[in-house]
Length: 191
Image 1 (cartoon, rainbow, N blue to C red):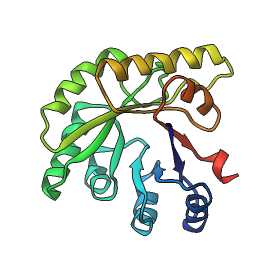
Image 2: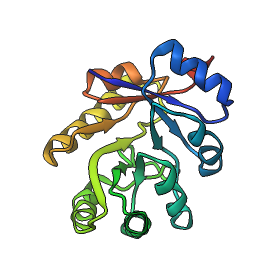
Image 3: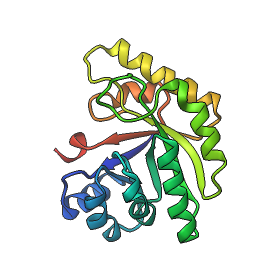
């Protein structure tokens, strides 16, 4: 069964708590460390994911606040997160972000770089790789989106990973059909 993540970017604590109760949400995701610092300590009983671009100098804050960091996209970032987790005596759960649409403006690594990053991550003792994350192309071409999501599902299977975080308010139904284990909904839940 696919889990729903409530994306909390720009939402007040009151709005978030209301949505968690209304929809029985068990996962929240935040795009910005500053907002995560303000909200996450106040949210109990939910899993907290970081889903935005993470700078290495903010790795310690993310490790301290988050159950899962979904946007690992470089060896440098993986090592920074590992170092921060080591200092806290924590095993940090992570996903690798893949730029499946190959768009310059999107974060993540290209498909062909997934294996080398997995090899690096597996050598870092304070990281636990659980899944992959992606953002599909922003297009009305459902075939293009489906193709991208299917490629992500193949990567998930190839590397025997438990989680596949893909699909947002505009394309979550396609993501579910293609095997997403987590969909990230913001606008759809809150508006």
